[in-house]
Amino acid sequence: MIVSEAELDPKYQALWKKALISAERKNWEYVIDQVLPIVTANVGFLDGRKLLRSAEGEIAGSGKKFSFGLGSFKPSSKKDPAETIAEMEENVFRKDPFNLTANEQLFDLAMKLQFSELASFALETIRGGHPENTKNMHKLAQHYMAIGLPEKASATYNAILKVNPRDMEAMQGEKNSAAQSSIKNQGWGSANFKDAMKDSGEAAKLEMLSRQGMTNEQMEQFLAETIEQYNADQGNIVIVKRMSDLYERLGQLETALMFYDYALTLNAGDVALQRKVEILRDKVQDQKIEEYEREIETDPDAPDIDDKRAQLAEIRRQRASVVISEAKTRVDRNPTDKTLRYELGQAYFSAGMYGEALPELQQAKSNPNMRIKAILMLGRCFERKNMNDLAKTSLLEASKELLVMDATKKEVLYELANVLEKMGDKTASLEALKEIYNADYGYKDVAKRVESSYS
Image 1: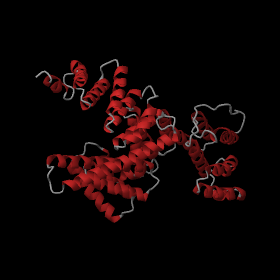
Image 2: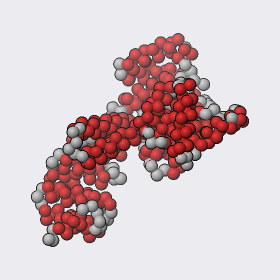
Image 3: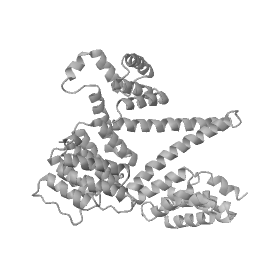
Image 4: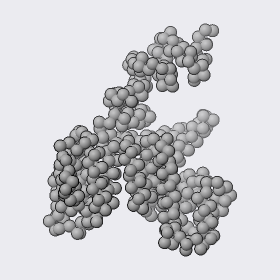
């Protein structure tokens, strides 16, 4: 079903070449004008549709708003699916590339055409424009499983868990897709399953690898055998990934990351593997941060303490840079989503970029679900900038809106007490602490601070 550039009519090939030049120059309007006639005439030219949607997304991200309906466009059920898709490109996607309903319909039309790649593209487009829409991601993951792409399904389930770590369906889906991916990579398809089982020794090893209850000694023995296989065939991605997995299970995360990185060079298009590398790199950085913090706290006068502090600061800077970049990308794709604005503000705050965080958090306040969180973080930003009067105003605002003494209100009152103390208003600071004391004696150092005031 996919149409390549070489299969296009010569006139469309010429347009495509012009479109690629326009894309290099970031002339997105020209890209759309040049690619739109190609994809409307060639439903299978997926590379063109991807570039088209990317150009439309660039323009939409510059200030145009997204919608959730088809507007005045009503697709005809009597038309051929390819004709309907062409009409949608002209009438809907050009103005609103991430339109939720239209992309869902594109998925349905693509499935009618038995064009699974286009169906995947439709759901991935929704994911790009609405990254918090886990319902769509579940549909995408199930679609990937149905068309035999378990690694992509696994990556999608992991993306869901990043949004909602308590999604039980995603947890189970990730396990199932990872198992299917392992079977696929090991070559244990239905056609050769019996042949694979003839090698009982290898079958036993694979079964052992899949079990979570292996002892360290068993894993080390299996690793030694896998290293021998790797030395004999270093380009075998199955062996490389198996070795990476064993190093990870043994807690040798840096070595595991090195081999996962190498596996990615062997198969750069493996989305699940890309996500695995990202997760493991975060774990390695977390491990290093904990190690440096422990060493600095244990021996603050060590001869190399300044180097350790500098390395710790650099790791945090790198981590913050990645988080900010990802958050900015999500906001650029959907600038009206206040939740994404809050996440960007939070990323800036964590990086110590308090001035950059302020406008994002101020926008996030307009979302009722994010309002208190945004106000609390605004108060912290003001306090970090030593604008204590503004911090006090924000925290008082949050406190008044919180009617129940829950964890959030305690946090707000505690921050307020600290700000008031900085401002020299010890009486008001103590009153805020007493509110917490009356509800939760064991909260942080509240009891000590309140009781010491009576001494």
